[in-house]
Length: 535
Image (cartoon, rainbow, N blue to C red; front, side, top):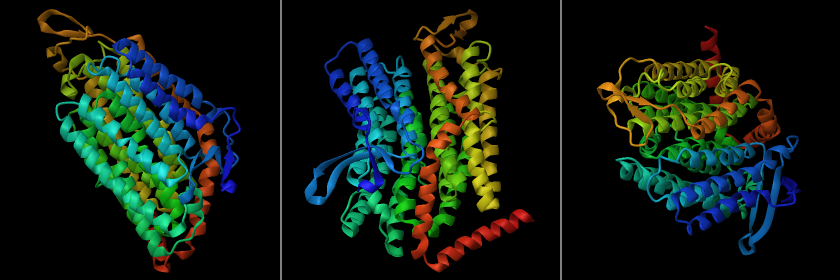
């Protein structure tokens, strides 16, 4: 086991602490009653967790593919099961994304959540522990416990604090993701029966018959595709996003969807490499459908939240496309796209939440002509909208261009099809931006404002107040990452470089048992794409 790991050299168990602090914070908040104190406490706990996690970035060794900051303790020796956690260049960025986003979820709920504040802070903090646990677990049982553990808090966030159709959305979310989890559990049990270990790096080192790989791959892929969500398993996402409170939408977009992409990278590619190669044409085909279909559906939405939700289907299509290109540019672009989508789409959901607090509507027609009334808001909204469709100089441009480079290198026709999705993204985001900032209709004028954001003017019209300091701080924090990653992505790409190359080596080494027909089929698809591109 030691050959895969670098034991934690810090003076404290950093990964366990990042998981324990939110749990302890959740327990303490159950004894608190004052709503303001609960909000402040939730913010303090998430900020402490963030501070504790910073050495994951500063002390990370980017020159090795081994798992770092590892804690390995006996758990159930009778079945060869240890408590073992660690991170590599793929998972460390997702852990940091989680700890960075959670304080923002508390901030954007400051006025949005009006009832049962104690319970809200409680489930939000438990949610943070479960999400971090998914990314740091190095045995399949621990991974599954955290994977399932986040379902109940997310279900409650939608079901208790959601919109008018919260019951429908929460149940649909739970049923879809729980069904996927069943396939995940079956695959984990099958691997343990075959190998006698739950330790993920050892599972990667085993060689499995092709048909076993294929069944394992399909079970994993179905679970992860539902979580992402990938077409045709995407239908739970718009309902969940629209009905969830702002913090729930941010958690879903920024972190929860990334678990699917992480699962593909951690399980499907290294454990079932031959099956991965055989299924590449299908996975790339579904990715292209997700990119184009998600963009097409977003283009026709009148609800801002639903538009951004459908855009997530397209953006996550770029993630699966990059992963299954199986080259360094594609996979690094996919990982960076997960980070960038977490920043940009999370920020857009915060923006929609801020407007909803003022006008009580998410309809584009009810939130138009904000340019003169809310110049600070539309400045931030414009930045995040440009980032969403990959405008040069923003973070999303870097990740999408890496995926496109990987696509044109392997299958040029796939690259051309992916560009259609990028064009659709520009169309629906610029349409949204134009209507919200400059459109002359004044739908918001007829909405009351019980938050004290607006001041009555003649004719029953309301002037909406611009952002306050709390809201400016939240959006400015996210804006920093939009431009930092957009202009200087090297630190993040450097952290994942060695781990990605090692993953590709694992896939290439495991292709020996792939049927010749499957490899020939893959080569044929690439050849057809090259011919079409050369016409």
